[in-house]
Length: 319
Image 1 (cartoon, rainbow, N blue to C red):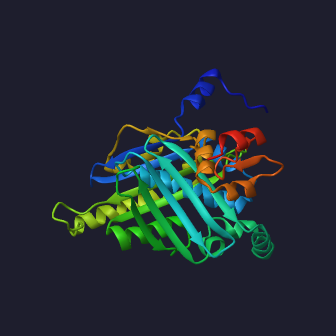
Image 2: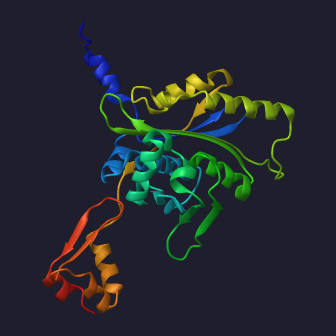
Image 3: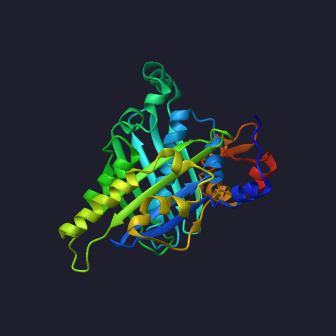
């Protein structure tokens, strides 16, 4: 028996929105939330490097978490999530601009990671903060450019998954209750990377106190249970529209959606920016970077290589 796809079905698949942050509110409790769905954006970022699967999954979670958290802020600039630890995956960086441009990269010790995979198996490492990141910290930074004060919050890495580390940050630094669920995996049909995430948040009242009413506590617990009931398959399903997923989860309590914000994989590196950095270096350092007179610079984020010829180095990068 052969399965066929009608033209109407193909049109539906193309129309399902992707690569976005969808804000929403649960009507019965006025809880705020955001749903992130990533398709080509996260696939582009993760396939630009030859990351082992455990590293790709952890970086995908970091990118999704950055998009969820940035969606809660009003800023003009760059929101950055960064982790540093003593594990084999010693650095994760993911950032998103206020215009929705995503990028991210990871630094890891391949020998240590290979030994860990041989000991535990790759599947046992997926999303594991203690095994992959080890002891260290997670930092959240909002940079709105020159002449503005940069905000940064840092807490130690505490929890089994990145979502747990974010929960710890909110408890310690922001005094805001939040629930987060993240999912990263490959599309079983297309083989491409996908990611999804949900976040629910309740803020202090106008008087500065959190909800203390028993009914509100029950509503919060109910919302968390409903959010937790979402499956990895639902969060990653390219055929399940974001609004349909939200309705499936919260329709009994009423769910209101607001305008979605588009996301896209877009690196901010450029030849001109790299040239400015090279110009700022002492001549001795620039000379050390040159190989056969050329200077080659590879962007850690998008893996693009920028080559400056001997003539350009001599003419354009001299003081």
